[in-house]
Length: 221
Image (tube, rainbow, N blue to C red; front, top):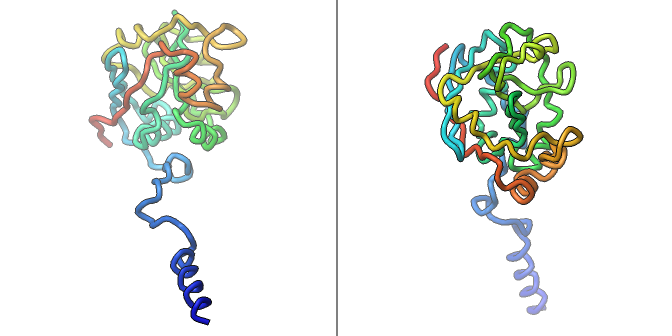
């Protein structure tokens, strides 16, 4: 009887709390895995400082240019989405594209978080920043910076929401030798980068320009 009581006490000690770690020892869950919580309205005008492995550049966003795009971009930057990411698609005399997260699970969470297209009120001139998309109302997290005047993109619904106002020479220096991705070239494969994150990009394309962090600067409503 005494042995049974002792065994029960040991069992209770080991499993009485559900066998789980104390709350403070559990790893924090990445908030970016819950896209639904990022819906704040952006300021009327704000600036984003991008620190990269080749220097810094500054983007100014105007919400009235493309409200839905500006709101999404503001929330992503505020949440640290673009920190430690890679500028994985650089096509000379065209544009530089980024916006796939380092963590493939985060990419999975955001890949269907589509926002409706904004009307195009600005042209895709050199330095303009615009969301990438693969069809009607398919913008999610990827953006690009125009290297030249790409006015032909205006009629396809690509709505600029901001512009590089300082450091365009840094943007011009993004690593471009890998070229475009399949099927147009042998550069990084976007679907693989989405599925494997930085693990794929850093192992197969180690020279890519890196975004160290993106932070919100001066803003006004």
